[in-house]
Image (tube, rainbow, N blue to C red):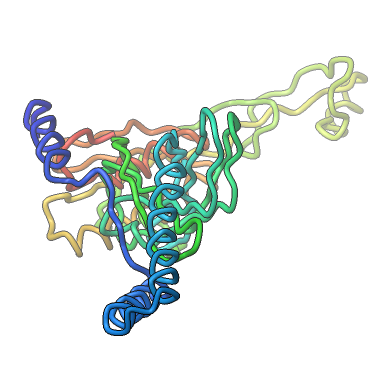
Length: 319
């Protein structure tokens, strides 16, 4: 989607979105029914006491609207996204709320999103001039990027009769990584879709074949001494061995598969990549759609592969 079209869609949503949403709570509906009953009784009987009670009830509705508006009107918010959420695994959404002046009470915060709207953070009191972090637990059932557009701040202050909400525009993206599943421990076969390359490195602490003997230097580990050769030559000799062959594996992904099958494949490859990287292998990723992650190791490289798998099959940036 082009940037111009995205701006037009946001403007269209803002035009049709009311500045405030007002919803009557169950207690509020009961209160309104009683208010109507008192009003009908006052009209039928002309009783001044009933008119007084009716006036008090209507004034409470007005006061509720004013105080709730003061709570949501000046709230400033920023979204704090989790770093690596996984599909089907609960994670924390967080928002930083701040009020330049005044105070707010009984606030609730949620994303304006069909899949994340059920995750609601609660805040009893927001003081003036301080940022308070509100958290909620959410679960995404599928991997992939989720486009976020707005955050909804609501309050039932002061009497709990009405819930007033305000939507704050806050564009962002939440990238959900593939869900966790057990990885098969067997080595890759020629038909498993994995490319395998091995290389051998020479190092002083390798576990492979004997490479050479040299004199032991000060401070080096005495457990590496070759005692038989040292006794024959009369000097301490240290063993150097070739490092164990380090596999270099490139995972192959067909990202042209149907959505559900692709999700399962991405989860399997994610589990395999994490297992191989934990064992010290160099792991990369290639797909039919042009996704390419060069083989590497480490936690940062693990995240690079998982993010590439999360975006596989989705339009936009692939890495």
